[in-house]
Image 1 (tube, rainbow, N blue to C red):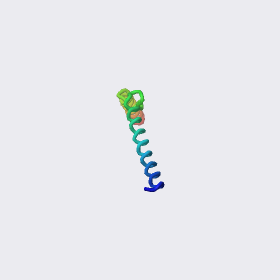
Image 2 (tube, rainbow, N blue to C red):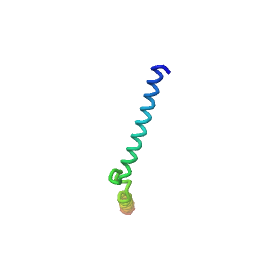
Image 3 (spheres, rainbow, N blue to C red):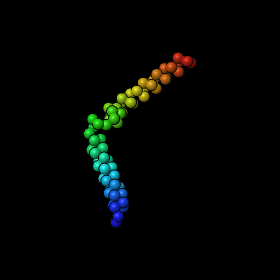
Image 4 (cartoon, helix red, strand yellow):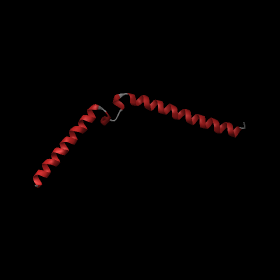
Length: 67
């Protein structure tokens, strides 16, 4: 194995190890509930459902005014 092959092999191995470490750290980070996006929590889903219902009700009220 010459020096060029050894260097490229070490570079590739280092890249793979770093990517694996970053993936593990990211998964560990997302395990905590406070680090997730607010809409991915049950409270966020409930808020989105409430907004959807209000929008449907408003649309229904608007169409009643037209007729």
